[in-house]
Length: 432
Image (cartoon, rainbow, N blue to C red; front, top):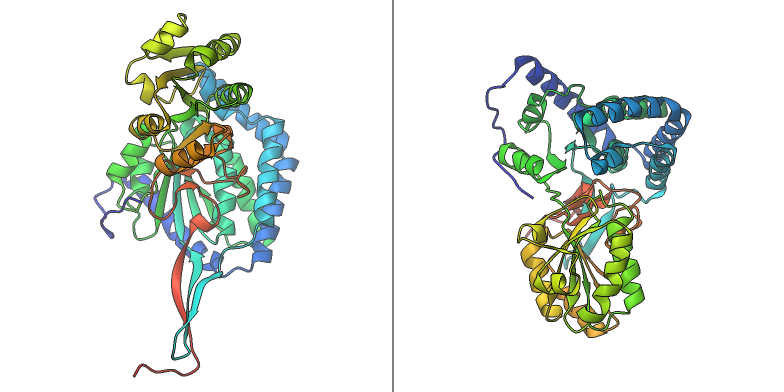
């Protein structure tokens, strides 16, 4: 988590935008105080109502989403970006289902952990409590509006959402449906607020609301996150890009490796948990790579490899060092041959974004060495990187995947959106 000094409020760049954001911050703080003490039944009823609203208004959601898609095509957005932006019937249903899953999860607020009884009889524990007001700045994917709103509300937090301009119509209707359904179900007003402008000054004003906002979570490209970190007067949990690796070990089962790689790369190449980089143990490179190369060519994947890769697969393009660090978000990938599991771990720690990395192997020792050596938020054995997801991990949905190490790392769900306070339970003890 990145933090900066509190209560620093530079002069606003735009008086009208600054006034708008200040009003949103004040309203969010008021809502957060009420959300923090709401019983789980009210929050769960609200989430169910929001899910019902998504389904009841699916046609309206699609209409608004079509406006964003049409504008995106006119602007020349990539296929991957348009895929992230799309809300079809299946994805609308998935958003509703995610809200219901969150409603069914245990409420973390008020949970006691680590209780100890001291010699004098006092009981000391930690209790989970909401962080307060969370600002989320994100790009492209309108489902973040639903996921972030649901997780923040269930964990007792108010949220200010600032989506990208490319998804403005989609985000607006989703936030409105959540706010309206939540109020009818008993939530306080302004628990979920979407910044109602595409003015970029709104982001900088949001980052200055340190008296009203407790945490900023940016989701998007590296340039967005770097801008947030550089300008925020509020602590930031970063969700950097996903240069995810798969390492095929010497004792990998070839068909398993093929299945995992093709799923990780091709099932949905425009998402952050898609595989971008492949590493292959030198002992199996000559036998495995031709099998893989055939499948990659069938799928239309462009391969950029090191000299050994290019020798074995002459159709591959020579890779630059930057290629090995790139999040392509499309049917392009880098590849290299390494000497062993230690070399693979060293390569990943040097080139990856510390998001999600996997090993394919039948060697338990190699698997454990990989798990212990790779410094990433999610590390997998014999499974696709596409599993790095809050829903797949049983968290209902996620705010994002934190690549930070302080407070939260990996998929951020309900517990990651709480903090703890020490509580002491006594029966009249005084300190001697």
